[in-house]
Image 1 (cartoon, one colour):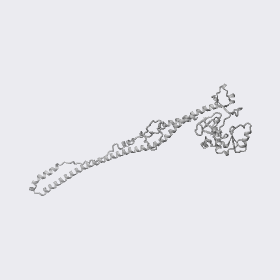
Image 2: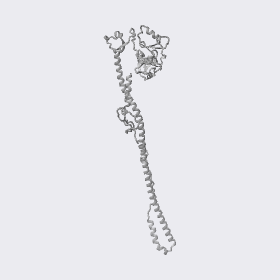
Image 3: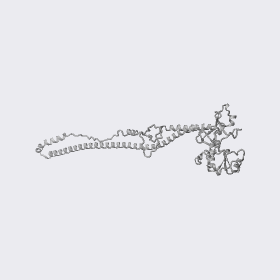
Length: 419
């Protein structure tokens, strides 16, 4: 049995003025998109013969009947009365007298609430003495089906007759009473008359078939939604993993650059050491030559200036040979300095261009069938699978590249069914 708390308040209120639906000013009428508004608000938003749903913005071109082409939704009225009995029974007034007495009974034939006095009069009247009535206390333990109303024919001369048949002729397609089947919907004139119970079963079966189709689509959509939420988490995980991969890759590049830097520094140190050793050796050689020449010259000059010719002549040959030997020692008369230099080969513009192209991000598409089985989904910027971790409650693999297509088809099917 339906509980009062199961009925949503917005189901009983007009979506525009938020007033509670009734049978007078705020009569509920249903648009083809299944959004329901009161008759009063519909008249206000109607522009010529064009009606635009305030919620989904679907446009409807209306015939001369205007908003009355949209069917009434009597279930709202029934639920409102059901809730009044359950929640506010003391506020229900008698509809059969002008005294505003508190209602005590409900006539299931006339569908009106009555006070005790009116109930007695109702039971004495010849026209209504057979009508079934039920008191408020019994209504409070009953379901909303008590308030269901069997519609009566409104055609002049047929008033009050129950609508027990349905004419399926294309031009008619409407409920009819017994008199209508004789006067206006004669079978001999091409009208097809069906018992209302049969047509009710047929149309209910049609809706149930659509319900099943929609439920399958909704289940798929829910599954896609759940897995999409999981994939959002997976992408965050994948982002962290790839960040680590990028860090590791560039750390390796940094190590390689540091290694190359140290290698160049070591080569530079060895080169400079070799050059310095060569220059030191040459410098020492020149210093030795200068010392030898200076000493020989000083010695020869001393002999020449201070010795007697008889003393000089025996020493001349020794002095001459030494000095002559010193003149024969050759050395470069120019100084050539080889200083090391550094050329940033492949390091300036070429290196910058190389660095700009280092690494590449891309998405790898993995085709997966939708499944309720628990599994892993490959969604991310690399081909590596996301490792399973404790607490992973993913529902299954999903065809992520086709997600938008599946969702669009579902929405289109749903809109078509509603219209």
